[in-house]
Image (cartoon, rainbow, N blue to C red; front, side):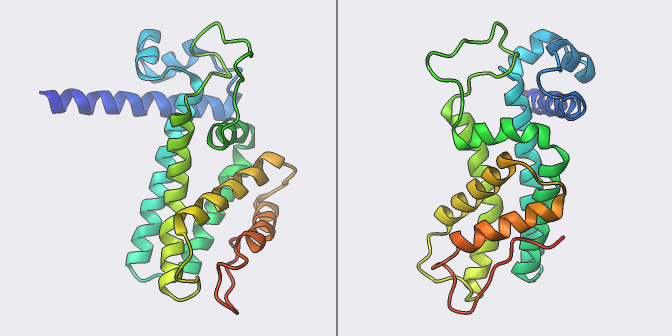
Length: 223
């Protein structure tokens, strides 16, 4: 019975996060109310507070799940023998597409991951579900680790291939690449996926300098 209850809770949590994201994607964070989310997820407002302390937590929950699905797909391709560069291209293209399609939500995710948020003297929201909401460091860290875990397997495969130096800290390099991607999206100005990928390529060229073995190249993804 306990397992059934846990499964029900997890299903309800996923349903709330998915419904919230669909509303955020259509109307934005600030224009979406707690009542809108409760109605779309078929739960009471009380249950919203039970599962998520704020709208940004709902957004991150859905985002983490989407990133995990992309990681699972990348691992499956790598285990099937796909070329790491091809897997990298697919991962980067997918992230760039999402960054352009949901550019109005990138700021909230980026601030959470990069550690930006209300300072000690900032006015606090009147409702726990208003935005922006204060995030504990662990909330943004979880999403940062999820993003890093998406990149790490591909870099490890490239290292095993001999394209990255054997002494490279893959976890640290993954974190740097993730930050570079988010900073590029936060900077804005990209009209389409192709421009995002070109921007990322420029940033990757700098960050990867010294990590690659002589003559090796890692591209930022192909559209």
